[in-house]
Length: 631
Image (cartoon, rainbow, N blue to C red):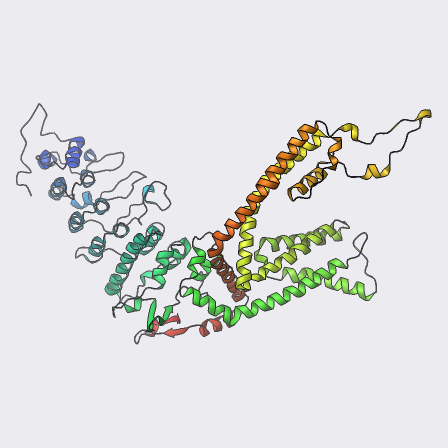
């Protein structure tokens, strides 16, 4: 350290060199000008002050001179840092200065160690830790919170910051330094450890995933070797949402990290128990591997498989189910029990559908509710109607679809209207019947080809056809209103007054004939033009026929020629675009069915199914380290 540090500087340009203000110290710290700090120690000692005194701290955010110096590191160096640390050591507030943090809500909790890591200065990190920096200090300001639009989430802790910024050397030092080791099991305000944080910052880029996976494995191995006698399993620590790092990767759809974590295999004998994959043998392109099923299968609550299958907001969900061992696990479940249960459900649904159709077709005519007569047909109708309703409501499979829910609602409402004596129950009954037959498409997920075809059809209905109908309905109603407005009122049937005060009666056939003054009838006729079945006979009774022809030609051009052909082109493009995705989407739907089938199985039988699909492997002589694997 500079031996002339405590010497007074000569006065220059009328400035009192013996007077040090916060602005002067901050300016010297930001410029790295240690000569401007000569005499600061004498000033502090003479005035019984320290660098952590209120006179030398920014009251708006809590910034100290040390923080100011570290924020202005140039080429990895700022000479003012060592000077400030030496002064603080001699004034007795070294640890307080090093661990002073920001106090404003945005950067609250950020210390000198955080800044040194952020500036990627390994030398200053070592120096600060050696001088007593708190390696568990948490920067929990709004800028560092997960989900902040203008900020950077790194898990608040210095170790997490080093890991998220790809500073492996700093990570290793913080975990193994001789002064104070970082606690890898410590969690931030959201309950995330450093492993959770690495999962969160990983993205779909291969380079980013490789970086996060490399540091993830390094932290895992080093912690295991340092703490293997404590029994603390770092990967089993849950955050406040009850998610381990593996479950968090599944929840966030981080497919790169998720794949790495499932297929992780260490060849180092000491770290081998950390592997989730064990290759048994390899013969050319063929190999046999065991995959760890911990936290994956449905024998555990909130398992990885359930998170992915039922997480409708998870990106990359279909693709994640194609990763081993999930793919083999689902295939095994389908082949051993789900396919049989699915076939039984299909047969039961067909029986239900046959009963429902028969009851609806042979319903009685007249005012409901009908009295029960002592005839075989009437007794059969009374016995099957409640069974039809009950059978559907107890059928669990189709209930996952909006169409099935709507069918159940219509069926219940129809029953209510029936017992209230309303004939309108028939309309709701037949609508429910139509939806019941549409629900048969649910069972196409049991077949690969039909399932993929159903996926394409639904995608076209929910995207191309829905957009077409939104635009088409506007045009249809608008042109229908215009045509009705152009009709000649004199074309209506008029009453003719006869001599003697009598009145002629118009022909009943003309009165009963649908009129184009009714916008519903006109809308239906214009719809026929869209599908090429239009009729021009009604043009005799319109005013301004030229305007009518313009409307008609414009309507046909926009709908029949333009929109209809555009719809066909868009549907063809949709089929081509999702042809590669349809299989993965079908796999996802079948996975949902498999887990539904499994949930319908009694718990004692479900545990038997799990044991048949896997095998137990133990490490060493410690039976507590036995895990379940699937081949």
